[in-house]
Length: 233
Ligand code: ADP
Ligand code: ZN
Image (cartoon, rainbow, N blue to C red; front, side, top):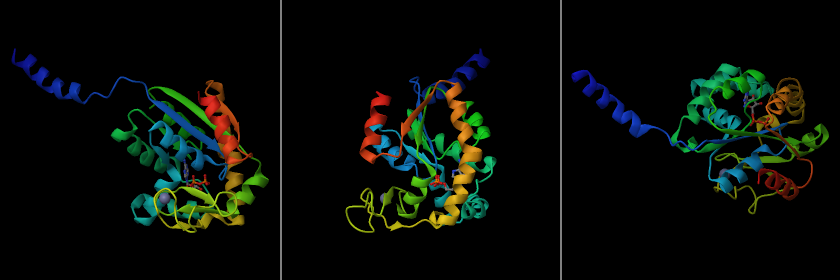
């Protein structure tokens, strides 16, 4: 009798904490650096009411705060190389445990390797849609050299193609806009190499599951938005 009473007592708080049964929607933005993943992820996040999670932004935040994760990531990021999987996975899985991720979330910059994709698969509890923004390398180099990003929220802008309303200031949060250290031509070319070698195979991984959508990312932002919204209906 005592035993059952104890079990009930222990089980009660567990039931109370049980997450909602609704399946999660997880959107994965794939594409080369500068393909427009961040721009679309921020927009979809506002539209769908689920958070956008950029592993690049999380790393940059760790760098600013000089955390152990930031220290581990710095040398890789400066060279345009990938941070080792175990560092990324620990950081990301910690983030998606948060209550705001329960209904779903949008991943921007993750997974970037097959082991990362496999590790994510084992945690997913619902619908997954991988969206690949297709853009040629030439367009990427042109875009990144003009890119500026918000120091606080990571929202991206382009000096010519999509400038902020007020020069140097983020439309979204009022933060300061800066040019990223790894947006120099030399580092961009290295990032593209890394992308083709390590991240492009992730597309085939989702294609094999029937959850890949291809979107033309080389057209105007508005056109990409239209295509994407039509596919997600
Ligand atoms: P990009 O514009 O290249 O997509 P991000 O802001 O997503 O830039 O990432 C910047 C850097 O952070 C990458 O070059 C890499 O060093 C590191 N990084 C971000 N996400 C990952 C990841 N999923 N795996 C490994 N490294 C990552
Ligand atoms: Zn901002």
